[in-house]
Image (cartoon, rainbow, N blue to C red; front, side, top):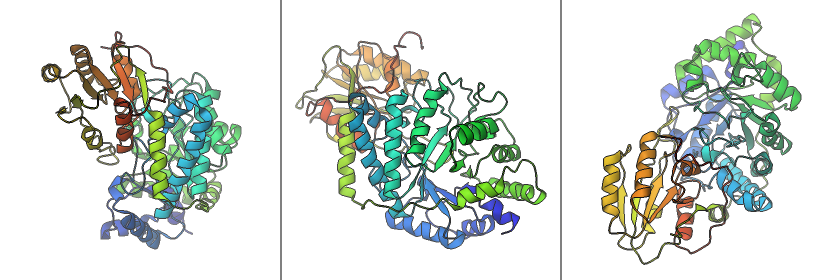
Length: 515
């Protein structure tokens, strides 16, 4: 194998489209990547995904590693093609009440999710998230985490990882060594995090390793107490000393996407590639730009050819990558059982965080005003990442209910219009998605919550929205907005079942200290 081929095998790249056009095929034949990361833009129906993966292996070889971020909940690459589960924080909300039950559900979820991914031809799931949601100010985490506390999160990481492997795909523990305390989204900029309790942050990763996870993804974060000079992506201390030596991990270490803003806004691309390899990563994720993928291959090839000192132990990385073969599945594919399990998880997760005025349950025969936000959002890797509708929720409201659809950035004039529209109704259901992080959304939500005595706030994306609302507000969450969450919400809102979940995070009253 020549240097160009060896360099290509270190790259896990993204591609456009649901089939290989001539340009993409030529690019793959040139790069010969070791892996392809699938995004929503690559997904048609099940048959189309299988056909695409067959095409990829025809071009790149049978040893190509196909991966995807199928975290469930907020982040899904396959949100219609296979059963979608409620996500990590939904499991955490059950675990606060009964961690053994949550472990059982996480194990079963992993098995069904792994079986569905393996059936498509996927080898590696870039999940589970091991970060602790210990700070509501983290804009990139939220419900992607199981919760805030290691004794809750670690067993759920282990159970989900075991389940994925049993289902037939590798689990990936991310984002090492833990970005829970970040106050910036790494998609946009480089955070600095003081890891208040390193042992607690590492516990979920160690549990996942013990459970059989063979991949770890690092994070684009500076941890000054671990390495004052470099972010984790470039840090030999974090990867070599902490992950390899102290944690004893000998599996594949993969970067997060090297095109994220935390890298490209702060460093030159050539330096990013050299730094990620020097620190000890086996695989480099470059998920969007073909020119950058080609440049990365060339930089690596030049380093291999010259014996550059920044090429960290290439034979060891090649050995680890070559050993990453899809585990044998021991779980049958069963969509019906998976969907029933997803409903069971979502049903247990729904949490009435507070209801001081006893507004719940809502009457099944009394119309309500539903005030709902737009849910579509973008990242640089795909558009949309989180597109969804609220049709399931809205269709379950009592006859005569009215829907007030919010614009993307509601201002105070919209709040006044909502208040006027709410006057004829005894109850108002207000959905929030960005109140914790966006000042305009926060002011709007506060105004609506105090303008009518019967407002029930439903956090559709992040329970930390509750932190910025008055303590007198009734607050409910299912930890997400997918149809499976919406079905569960309806049952609790209208008293068909009691709320079982408990917040797996610490919610702090910030209603007066955040404008």
